[in-house]
Image (cartoon, rainbow, N blue to C red):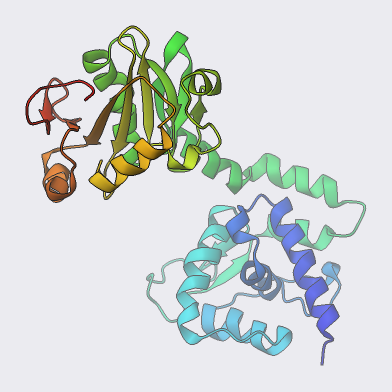
Length: 318
């Protein structure tokens, strides 16, 4: 029976190989490492130079190998996780072939199988030798790195916005950030012309843009960014501060949220305009009962108009 130290060492080494082959972080975990070892037919005591490329099915091949040789038991329903979160990416990264023995097999065939590519096997067999770096460079030149492919694809989907002075920010993909971009590019010129962007969050990076100098001058606690709304604009001429929540699923400018912001901004003496931005009427209708009075509503689908939740006056601070 293999020692626990041997098992852990082999898994750690397999993770090094996966990272070097350019697999994304999500495919460098224990499950991915064990899958690579199974496809390489490497046991805890094996040398990397002994690697082979047997064709294995997921359950009876990969998962049984992991159970028998590495004493890791995965539930039967983990089969789909191995296939979708490990083997699918191995194929994309040219580390493995899908159904190399019979490419005509249907997707749901019980005989569906995977095997290492010749190029990946050559790299794996070189691990720990003087030829390792050379084989890695050769593999990368021929197939690239999946982590870079994913990164480029993600970058293509980024949401660019232009702010003061022509500076461009790139927001992560998603409906929420599309509405944020619309607030900066459509709402601000119409209803806050000449205003300066002081704060902009991102679904992936909370504090994407922060003008700490102006926030501090206005008496806004710059150590409490997590409590600020999604977007903060400032009109220096009118001395109006626009506090804008962007809503694509939850969180309009509710009475509770207004109280929180008033408490946080008690040292800020400029006028405050509370705004909730929605992508469209459909999303707006879901939240109408939660929107606070004395606030404004803006819909990205009709950028030239606003809905005023103020009783005795229109747009502006109270």
